[in-house]
Amino acid sequence: MVNKFAKYLEAFLLLFSISGRPKASYFYPIADKIKTKLSAWKASLLSIAGRVQLVRSVIQSMMVYSISVYAWPIQLLKNIETWSRNFIWSGDINQKKLVTVAWKKVCTPLGEGGLGLRSLLRLNEAANLKLCWDLLLSKEDWAIILKKRVLRNGNVINHHVFSSIWSSVKTEFSTVMNNSSWKVGTGQNINLWLDSWCGGTLAQTLNVNQNVLVWLPSKVSDIIHDQKWNIPFHLELLFPTLKNIVQKVTLPVEPLEDQLCWNNDSSGVLTMKDAYDFKRLHFPVKAWAKTIWCKEVPPSKSLLVWRLMQDKIPTDDKLVERGYSLPSICSLCHICSESTFHLFFECNFAVNLWRWLAYILGKALHFQSLEDIWKFCDSSWTPQCKVAIKSAVINIMSAIWFARNNARFNNKPTHWKAAVNWIQSNVSLVGNKTSCCSYSSITDFIILKKFNVSIHPPKAPVIKEVIWHPPFGQWKILAQIQPS
Ligand SMILES: [Zn+2]
Image (cartoon, rainbow, N blue to C red):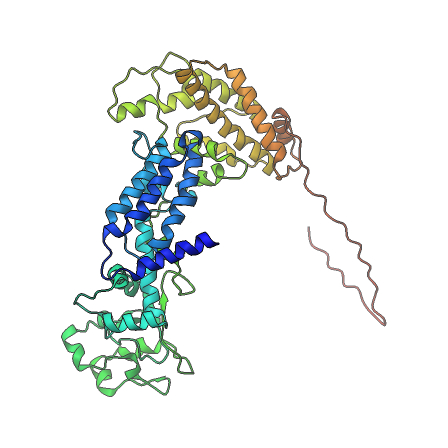
């Protein structure tokens, strides 16, 4: 608690000690702290998944205090992202790895094929957008004073103002205005022609020249009388369609205050989450993401499969693609050169493991691309059986990578039957531990037995006793017979 308060205090002291645009040197102490933390962690003892978790929960939370107040110098944010990236992939902030997933992809939600980290550059933009929103809507003294200094008739002033907050948020003013619209109350705060309050702006819809605007009424309140639309006669003559456009907007019965609403959210309120969602990159949803990131699979195994799905496993072919010159031979079969597809699908070692799975499932498996792995996981298995099969697929991939690394770096070959035993024991553990149930399906029953998993029957329905008394007096029974 004390620690948290100290951090808030630090952020606020920094805020009030700066006037004008913050210089990069003000942020060095925070950046240094992050660098020291990343360097001090015993990265070698952690898996990549563990390092991702550390960056997500410690580094990114450390940044939130100051990133929500200032526009950080972009180069400094890039530096912190480079340290975080190197730390995740190599365990050392100064050491770059050759085969990595692009940082912009890492910084996307799990469902879109990322690792759920947040891009600091986008987070900084989002924080400024949110601060700009708060500035425009807040009734607090700081916002009222600053607004008086920087806005004239709803527009941004052109000259420079010494304010650390304004220097951070002024670039977002147009974003707020372009992505929000006014809910009309009294109309006193809304520019009749240039604000968006009845679809687009009236100046655009009616094709009104900017030079003409000085001669026309400027506020929406100028065409409202007694909470009803009251368009002056000369305006109706000039713009015959104006009445129709305006009357589509319903005015409140009581003279309420005008309200700015964020277009991209149904509530109309811009939260920090909305702001980040607006600023971040969006990728199509990946169907396999839900399958690999779940409580039944340990994060380190999910991460290996995630790298495989991104086609970023550092096999020899990937190293050669990046200009590394090396003689390549598969460490498991010593026959072919090593590529990701060979290692996981074509190599004898892998083929034996997939054959074992095919025997258990009682069906042939064909893989032409990485996406094909998940096709048979989506078949109509019962929930418990699906968990077991998914676990088997993920453990097969882990076993192949583990055997490859053991052969290559420790000179210890692994027999495929030993790998099957290891996979079987893992699947048995996960299948027995899961809370998912299996219904009456003979095929699933056989599969679960082969995996050494005991079946979880569904919960029996609770039978409730209901006593019915016929009502007093005369009554009739109406029976309806459904035609078969
Ligand atoms: Zn091989």
